[in-house]
Length: 363
Image 1: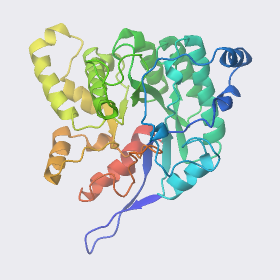
Image 2: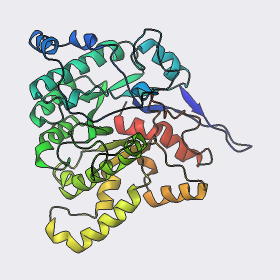
Image 3: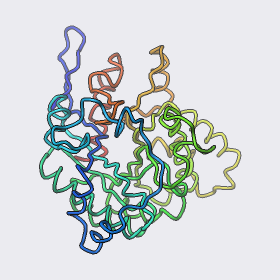
Image 4: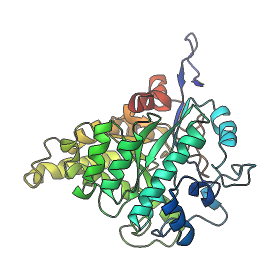
């Protein structure tokens, strides 16, 4: 369960535990989830079924946005077979820990009570069919994101199982995440000492990636969601979330990171000129961001000139908040031996590949 790095001649090789912070488990079928629903909601599920917001779509040639080789022998979709995932991901790449993030549309249900029941069922399914089976896995708490009181209750209930190591939200929400509407969620996360993981995705019913309207092409959707992450960072900082909840930590998952330094520069400049409007924001936005935000490596921005990548890291000054991710089983999977530049300093590689996640999630 280690990553061995090539060291300069005359020096011992270093090794660290690899932590994959973005793994997507999927249901074999909706019938699996029904097993974990109470009778009242199982009946609702059978008679009416899910009714959620539209948004996500994948190319027909890439169902589930999955790798072509990730379809398991159990006949289900990629990510639905724990034994196959063990072999193809954890064992093959010697991954020490993996963090599950289900993308099942659970948080996008219009019936919020049914949404909460589905979230609880997904969490029970993760515990029974993934965590109990594979000790290297940890889970994210799926919540009804647009019902903050119900979501907070699910966080407190599930946090008693320390194999659940973060709260899961999606990047495109009904309101900007700094709004009071979501504060009960943050209170519960801070109370239970759990980070909030904000993943690429849609749950609010808005256009799938663009504040300017619905895009025409998948490539627009795939690339354009980074603007959602920018909007959410601005909202969380300017609304003073981290002054109100000073121990709260946010993880930006599958949103990239090259955009973050310019955003900090712009926020700092505006704050200096307009700080009278936000007296609750006591520190420069860049200070708040560098203390309270983490991000994952998939997708990694890859400039042609490696000096440009080094400049990105220098501008960010956040190599201790960057964490490795594969995004398994999706087509843009990043393997541990190719996810980050091999020329990075050994200490930086160790942090990114495992040490930062081990510290944040306190495995």
